[in-house]
Image (cartoon, rainbow, N blue to C red; front, side):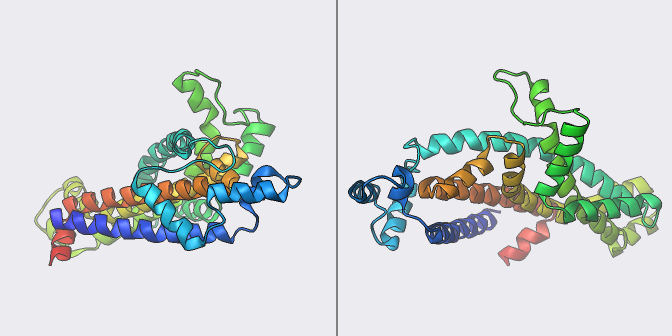
Length: 317
């Protein structure tokens, strides 16, 4: 297990390093002068040049990248170019807001999708199965901004069931916060329900047709015992991987939802950083999303290796 974890962590760190290179390269493709962006179009060129020199944005790109990696290694995320505030503070506040929204969406999506997928597989070919497959395909084929717009127009504007803006009052109790976040959660559930439900259904169908299931049935085990001990244990392994992957995608998908519902989260902050060419804030925000993705996949690998030791032993071999 230790060798397995070391390899997975090393692979994750290499992935994060490549992510920092890609983000830095793409962020510098964005046109515009950082000093000019901050001081405005009417500032003297001397002031702009002085600010660029102070920020280090007049240095070669490889020097800027190495300096930023050195800061990251020391745990220093730097200062925002636009607000001169600590990037760590800005990222921290926005991250926890997005994490709360993502966690609530996952708490609703995962049990609902797994139960629906498993039941659809057990009732394969029935009307319920066809409905689940159709709803899953329709929901997962729609991007987040489409589902969010539809929900806000119907439930927020037309029916006035929920508030249009996902901004609970300061000091609001948990139920009030949940009421304000209900529509963003719905928008995310509709999109991510389909992926998980279809994977759970496919895994259960494959497990039901496997030799070990036939052997268990031939031994005279009851159907409930066969499903619990043999089918679900093996069928849900691919679903765990999908859930981990969707966790990373979920933080990326929050961008559109947060903009539409005017929610102060990490996605909205990154859009503002990209618009203002705020490279420290943009780079750190994307890096945080990468770390979330890495941790989610690492936890999924650990859980899968516990449920199925062949995965771990196969890698060690």
